Image 1: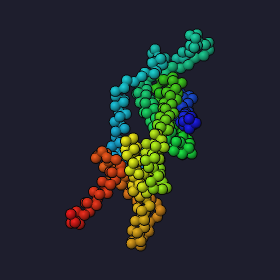
Image 2 (image 1 turned 90 degrees about the horizontal axis):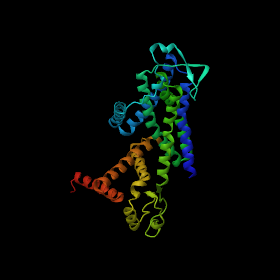
Image 3 (image 1 turned 30 degrees about the vertical axis):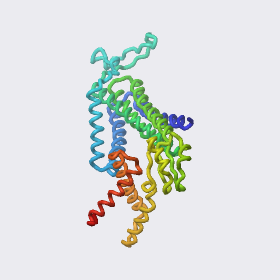
Image 4 (image 1 turned 180 degrees about the vertical axis):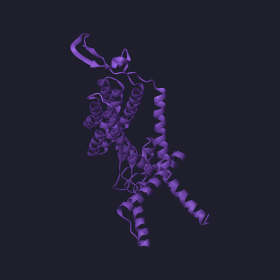
Length: 350
């Protein structure tokens, strides 16, 4: 419970960065120069994060086509949101009686309906184009903040220090997002504090996402039998918590057939030993390759090659399990046997 409360507070602090950005945007109603300057800063930050970091990393991880399709899907989604969702006219109360009233100071009513003598304010006409842009940005930032909250929650549940780092990074990242949310609304003629409230509320999607991740992960535990063979057997499997949904076999043969049957019945995802702990033997093979070439890789190159091989092997087993509707251990054997059969066929042995 303490971890969940901490996750909530961390994500709330991160989300308040959006409100802080909104406050910066509405301290005073921006003129053309201030509007252009602040929007330029926020655009620069977002473009840098999106294209120089996120898109490039996505291209490396999933390939150019997949990442580009995902980027296009996001753009299409926001276009559909813009076209189909009715736009809320926040600024109706700000519309003046006439165009000339832009230059007329109108007494501001007291909150009880009385006018404060000597206190006036300028009313600004609504610019529909900016209002529409502001509402669209607010919707997009709110949607965007939800997975950011998930990142904070998941990061903290994995390693508290990592979660704190993510929260601080998102806090700084959210300040220009808050500016981008509130500034078009304020510039369009919407009341400054209404603009701030929209930015502030969009940041509250962060703790919602963080709580979702924390609650999900507290109901999901993993188990890593990493020492001795046969430790999870017909008797000890009864002591494995029902909350364990994943088992990664770090040891050789830590799970007996009887325990395997229980895991299959309970739909527990098991990464079998000869897939899960194959890193060591794979790197040993790399050593042999380097010795044969008399050319040696750097540590980073070894890790990169290992990541490629392990990821390919894991994906092959998962795909086989899904396609044939079998347990992960059976799928791993099926992949291995299939490759041996194909090799024998290519050699003419079959």
